[in-house]
Image (tube, rainbow, N blue to C red; front, side, top):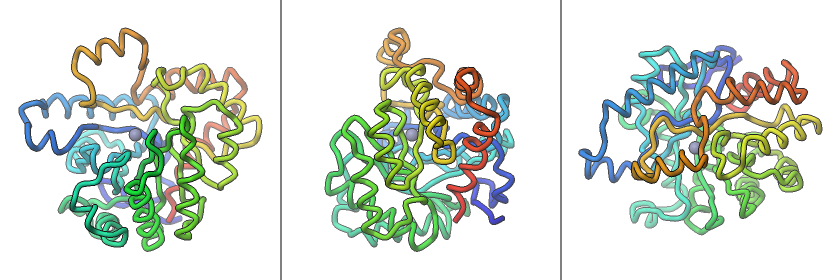
Amino acid sequence: MGTVESVTGPLELDELGVTLIHEHLCFRDEATAIQWPHLYDEDALHAAALEAATGALAVGVKTLVDPTAMFGGRDVRLMERVARETDLQVIACTGIYTYDFLPHHWQTRDEDAMADAFVHDIENGIQRTPIKAAFLKCAADAAGVTPNVEKVHRACARASLRTGAPIMAHTHPGSGTGPRQMEIFAEEGVDPGKVQLAHTGDSDDLDYIERVLDTGAWIGMDRYGIEMYLPTERRNATVLALLERGYADRMFLSADSCASIDWFSEEAEEQLLAAGAVKDWNTRLIHDKVLPALREGGMTDDQVATILEANPRRWLTR
Ligand SMILES: [Zn+2]
């Protein structure tokens, strides 16, 4: 059936099993972490990643896809350590997570040079380890597809064409970025079936979502628990409507949870939690709360298996 690279080596695709397609074992700014390491408690970060992994395993998840790229503090050694300690299968990516900014290094080099770096991670290994990336990551957010964002998309497209690796693109449905992102991939010659548009489920506008599906891309209904973008009930209603329209074989369910994240001060984090801006935002949420509600709404066992097992396998096939 073919194999896919994990942080502990290649896996047979049919060994993937139940897969969460979008969860982060750690999310932080690598520049800040390198310059001011005293601001971070590495033991606490490790413990949080371990808890995310064991939580996923406890609800029956076998594989976690971690799309942390540049600017998210991608650390494959931490991913490998947690995978070895728990037996959770973890899949890593390469790419750049930026809404616009690029450092001088990448401003003065072209898309092909950037693609070379991505291909290195896929073919040789990440961060001087033998751990290989299985997919590519890029992003567009509220600022839209700026020239820098477009450059990263074209580099991901070219690396995908050279290696067969699929692409996950962070999108911002609020500003309708998905279709424009797909235009760039199409211009570069990427098969739309290789592309997953993450965060499509932040919208419950079925017209927008069907426009995205019409491009041929996969959609990520993948931010369960981030209530401030869209509450769980509305995410569920959208998923059920899409299931009714026959899209089970085109979507993913995940939470985009971060075992730890450095975006907020302690006070801000407490305020967000108190305000209910995020709720149950962890690797157990899909199984503990979302699937029971979706099943009550009519989702079948077949559809669950399609979304959590068959779709990840198909998207990750090179
Ligand atoms: Zn994410």
